[in-house]
Length: 172
Image 1 (cartoon, rainbow, N blue to C red):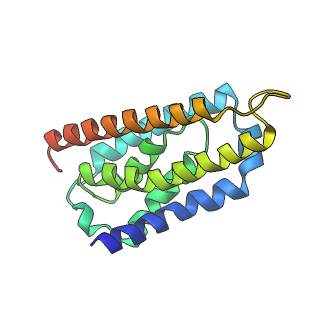
Image 2: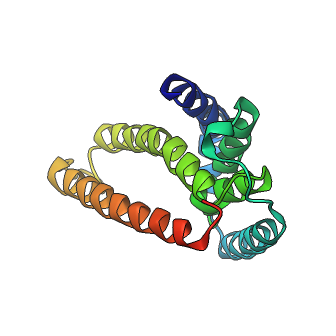
């Protein structure tokens, strides 16, 4: 089961990796306006609400298949648009497949970890190459490392809390 889950995590990373690398420059410059972000927030909120109401919430995470991982990965790719929640879009995709509430959350967070780590490392490479935040500034790794560590710990605590909450809703 662990190998199967690891394989699905790799499959789930593929859509975001392909789209993220192919559209990096366009994504950073074109889709940053307030109207795009506002529209994305509204659309994703409606999609999550509708999907959660219509979903069957029957399947455990062990029943997840490669196509499920690909759909969750497509949710991650959609989240490259500012205003689209990565966890929200991946949860909506997994819930649409009939997975129990806790299963999509776990799948979303598990698939998200290596994707976010890869994006973070790419951005770190760009920062180091650019010499820091401003013209002529030296890159100081300490604040960056501290930020990553604080984000990782608080993210882990929030995920634990969310999964516990989803278990209390039933369907987990």
